[in-house]
Length: 302
Image (cartoon, rainbow, N blue to C red; front, side):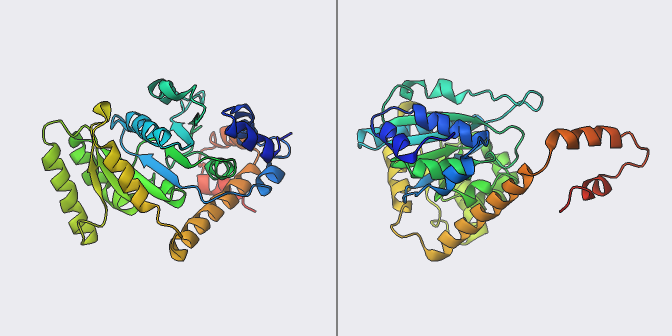
């Protein structure tokens, strides 16, 4: 049984996130009434900000600084932090709980760590549902931290109004390999740990890549930060604010909605499949001498 949206909103307004946390669990586990609950939501135009980048870039520390900045402005902030799951037991490391520990008792900050459970793309199944819920219950900013970044991890672009790609000066080779995907998803580049050697050279390299890929070096802002010292946070917040132009262009809005629609339909179709049965059938079929995965998969098409 899902809770009423108005009761969840009242809890959020009072700094009590218990009903919200239970509702998120209900959506994740597809409890009875979850579909009707989702159809009852009336989301507001709350900006969704995606933060992605290679492991070790300092995303969580940067997010903690942004939280502090927005809380000082009197904003209520929600963070969904996606952690990688073990491919064996599907549990998440949930390291971001440690790095953002200072905000767990703050009545204006809600933080939820989520496991990918083997899902590729940097997000999780059900992320659209969770962000829509958060947009419906009184938050001013919604921030999503994703797992790494790469060519296959660009689905954040189909969900976030603004996508921030966090890099460090040592990431030159990684950027070269991932530049196509990065250019597609980034609205803001952050060069974190910019007090390190070669930070200036790396920033220039990034600008050169944009000139090659986009023809306009200034089309994507590049902000240099030192998150551990809170350097560049005001500038980053300003860059984010500049992206939140009232009235998202109809073309961009349609693009986001189409992407979300396809993800919702795909997720619904996947839920119709009996996972344990498929795994059991596969275990038997793979013993065949001429096993063919395409032939095997055909029996599950509708």
